[in-house]
Image (cartoon, rainbow, N blue to C red):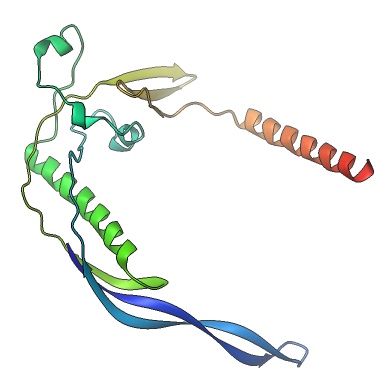
Length: 196
């Protein structure tokens, strides 16, 4: 990827002013000096995963990444025999678009890290992708749905690493009581440290 941007370098000047009582005061004022910057970046993306499920939100699946894709095995029906397996629901063109958007965002962040100075603006990134391939991959993800009161909660588990993601019920009363208990302990600790 090739990038261009305006690199900003902070510098400070001292200015005088009168405060509300009419007294002369000084303060530091930050300014930015802008300079053109450009550069290049080579980055290899390997196995950029795109969830192909419409039934499980992508952000929930992102919570249980990464998956060790270096150890992928060829498909064998015996792996999924007896299990409910979701077939991919997003076609190749849509998956390629999602993948490109994710890679573009990562490239932009990597290019931004290369910009010298304290800040930047007008970052333009021209990505050049080559040797793109795709593969359908079945990943071991365990899904759990449970009901608590009138609400349904969903949990996902990475079948390789054991990472867990999802939402769980939170009790406002218990949270308030916990915060109050912590404050009481802190106040007691402070009181003992002052008196003892």
